[in-house]
Image (cartoon, rainbow, N blue to C red; front, top):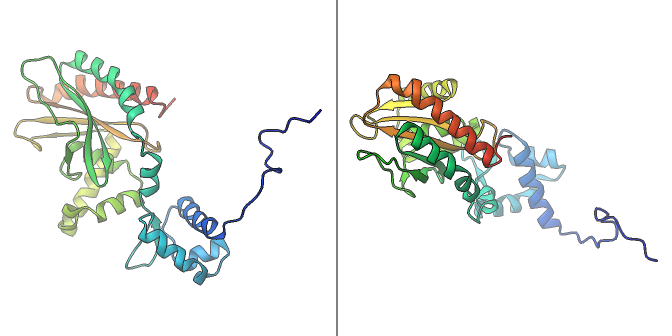
Length: 263
């Protein structure tokens, strides 16, 4: 009788070496494992390869959009290309399914419309909205894109990005490029405050009299993060802090758990 092989035993599987592919994967994995960008020389040292040996592969990966080279330092870092590939098939479908019921409960509880947004290609994208049944209600276009710097949801998500990701995102933001040093410093202070308070609240940014409050769906370290927001014309600040904020946080926690982002 033939012995059944262990499914984890790959010793009998043929091994085909593809040096060029392995070299490219080594580069991507190395960049993913480091918090800071690496130069060609640093990559060569870590991977124990010759610097000239990596040149053509680095050029190819940069041309295909998998890595980005800083023009000043010459260091390389990953782009979001791999993330986009991994999430080609409705990346947020699970999140949307997990958010539907909690968002409906939130709207019923506070009587205000809410919406869910994420960062995609440097813009804030509205994934879903649950409208209030009230006669006077605010609505946001699902699928609409908005600037990160001038939306409460965009700033909240920026505040939770790691430094490298935030720097890359801002470097590609056309509005950020127009800011003065003082304005950039003010933005950093604002993002730090948002992160410390664990929410963003602002009045009159999108439209006169409109109050926006946003909390994070996910955790600072989670692979997927979204912004859950409520906009209102009628609520006052005290009502937002005492009623809306706790309800938003409960809803965000419910979505995170249902989506498997947190246990």
